[in-house]
Length: 202
Image (cartoon, rainbow, N blue to C red; front, side, top):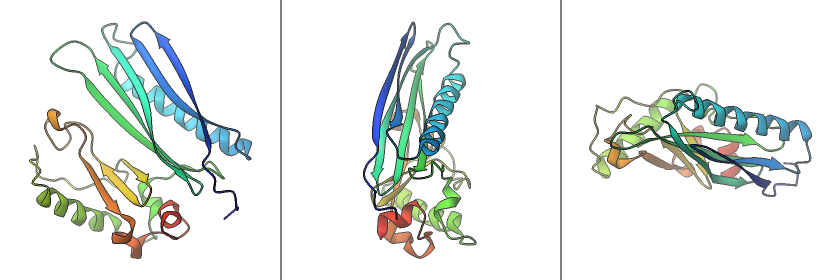
């Protein structure tokens, strides 16, 4: 622990063009310039990737609204979601979401596997919790629950790990993104103590 552990300062950048309204975050005033550069480069890369996936600007019909949500900004852990809504005609548009989780002291970006102790079967453990939630919440799936991918979409929100699926991946469009919040205390035994979830517990 570096004793700083304060929330980092986030600046919102706005890009307004024909058929594009884009808001995206950048971290500013970090003690480490290299950490700041790594985080901001990763954010811009992901913003551009989402635009490309939505067909902007390749498809002249595509109208995009992109924004972000801050999920965690404490204890040297920054977790945020980038959302991109595109409409190209038809009944409704489609929103894509990608989440990024960083160590704000180093700029390191975490994948899901980085949150758990090496060798722990985190996939099976998370699947069991999610399947129990599907049953308890009486969710109607389009397909049998496929299980999470090792690189599944997630973000951290205070003392929860939130696993989610893209629109249409599990459920009908009307339900949007299926979110599965998992308390860090339910998976405490497999959490990497000096990883981002460990910092939320201790």
